[in-house]
Length: 171
Image (cartoon, rainbow, N blue to C red; front, side, top):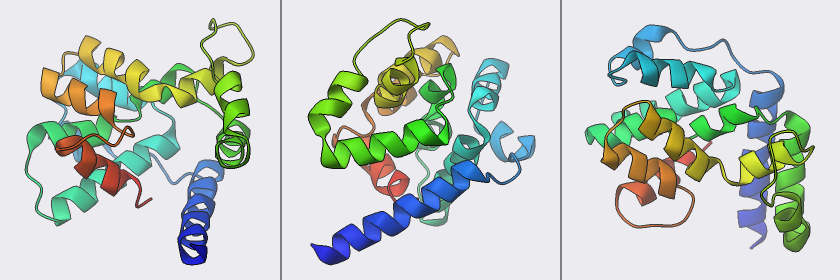
């Protein structure tokens, strides 16, 4: 239990620093091979830089472990696209981690559905980025397999979704 919490804390600290000081956005050549339409590339580019870099890291880990499922690889690049609707800042991301751990009911209330102009909207987007992102991915022209993986990531579903979740949780 203690080791698990320590490892999770270490992972969260790394995520925090990547958001505070994100690396340079990845070059177009790294994504153009998988994203087949200009709309998909544009959607990827709308994501915050830290999320773009994270998505490239997930993609690279999948590829280095021999994953060749094209829907899964494309979903790796676009799985956090929903966050682009509000670009949640580091304080909102930290609040999510703390509230989900210490006061889950408070997080559920804070992240409940609200309008785009409401102050809670970035919390809503962060909590529901998978569903929101799936809609954006579908509008960009991605196939139903990619949309399904994006929509269901983070929910503990089997198959390619579980594979994405495992690699997503690594960093």
